[in-house]
Length: 239
Image (cartoon, rainbow, N blue to C red; front, side, top):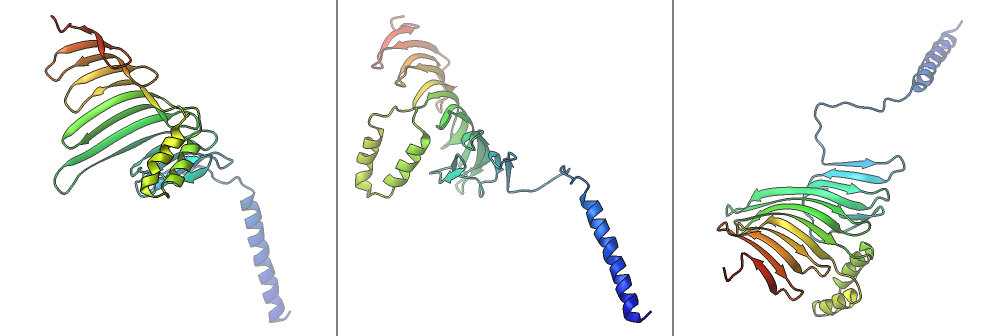
């Protein structure tokens, strides 16, 4: 047997072994679970088997805009790290954001926010805590949202922002004419003046019942009419 024939036989045998190894090795189920003690990431997207986005955990630099049914729109002012929740249609329906720092003058700017959204609309339940300009506030709020999809508002904003400044107010007035407005219905929180209050509001967002403890510790219960006038109060002013 010539040298070239021996080489071909050896080469053929090696290829056979490699092929068998690949075929047999590939028949085993792929490892689908990984374990880490620690991992550094900039953003994590949790998706369904069909690719639908369900959760985002992200740093500030990679935080997404507004995502509605898988389509992303620019957010006008969201610059934060946090977590976003998405429904089965790939539409944002709540989230958790947080941040805090001292500026060059030593002033603290800090915030934390948790919210849940109405279907195809904005937040209807929120918990917030913030510090700015030396004042601290924390609150829980419940909001009524309109029935039209938030995409109408997003598209209107994109269109109106391109108009000259003097035309924008009139265009926004036209957009909201005949459309239901968002109204806060309940507020429970601490204000920057150190008072705490519970405010129950009507469908127009007007205070109707206020339970308050002032900064000096004095309590107050007020009932108001639809014009904001106090119609009953405890303790009474006369007393």
